[in-house]
Image (cartoon, rainbow, N blue to C red; front, side):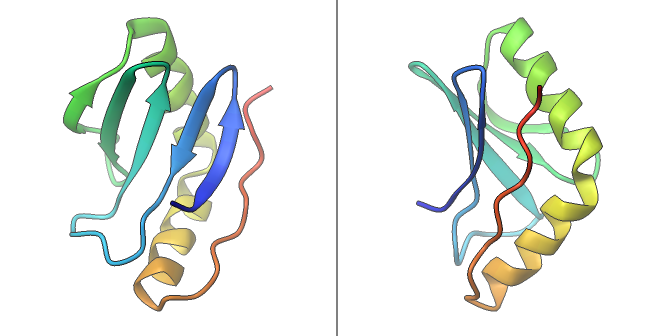
Length: 86
């Protein structure tokens, strides 16, 4: 489970061999969600509104880095950490 970022109790994860479209997973407490990178649409799951807002804000700032990590995951290469939201 490659963790690529962590902030405010939220853990951002990207899995190797995951299905398209390009997306990432976020966990917050007992909640989890899958978010498409292209437009930040929720593919499955739920996060409380405040946590979801933080995740979307972070993803918007780091969209290009997320896409690069997605490509690395497809090539089975190590993923790089992404700066947390501050």
